[in-house]
Length: 376
Image 1 (cartoon, helix red, strand yellow):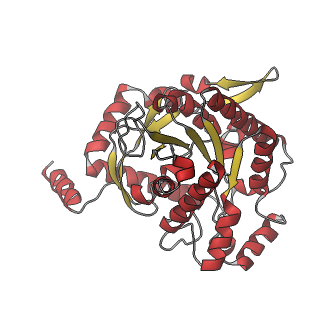
Image 2 (spheres, helix red, strand yellow):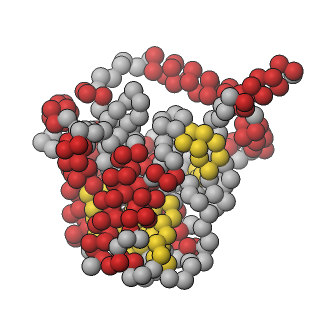
């Protein structure tokens, strides 16, 4: 026991922290845990604080302050943005820049509230809109759509996660399938023993180190059983590579259909509340690699003529359904090539993974500029 206490004290003095930021949620399967905090170092480095309402954001009053333009951001890990400090996120940058746009603000203050959670697709974002967002009475709802995985995240067949809800087609209608509530894994996550283990992990740095070691060993064993995947110029290539071309198999066709119907459903619900609905398609490391030859190599490997099929498809949906769409990836690609910078990746992994601080800054500036133009 004395040895464990010494190790615990040493880890705390060294600033070691791998917090569990997530908790189970009966509506969404998983959500950010109110009050969780600690250092995030899996990719990038930032001290993370989850506010009292379970948002990776500062505290916000639910009642909208007078003379305030409120923007709610829905998204996945790109919006959650654990990799960078809060003030460096694209939505924080966007908030600051929009305050300079009189056309958009009409003299009001600007408040951006972030509802992003890692692993979310449009299904969980729609549920978040219904469960969380309307409490804050936003004037604009901005859906930050990660084309690389959001479409596949809306399909049980493609995502392979049995512990979250999905929308599915039944008798020609889109309905919510929440059968995950009866899964053994979900019930175990809500058990008294699991709650106790989470509390121990929240408090103990030794327990956090043990969890990290366990997951690292599990990942190593899983990787040892697979052939190594070679990726050109360090770009990410995996299941989501199928997103870059017209779907040919049933699972991807259904995933696209469900996604598009969910976005239109979201548009309708936002309009019914008297708010404006905006979709921003984000980028992948491959799309915005600063080296044109690396992008050509990736396109050759994927057998596509360009890397913007999902962006164009969402843009076309917006034109048909009557909502604004900003495709960030083409503009980010031009910026990266002109300035010869990586907008994705950290340290030894430039060009892959999430946006770095530069990526967030440029994205935030581009989004705010477009919102300002649309308001004129």
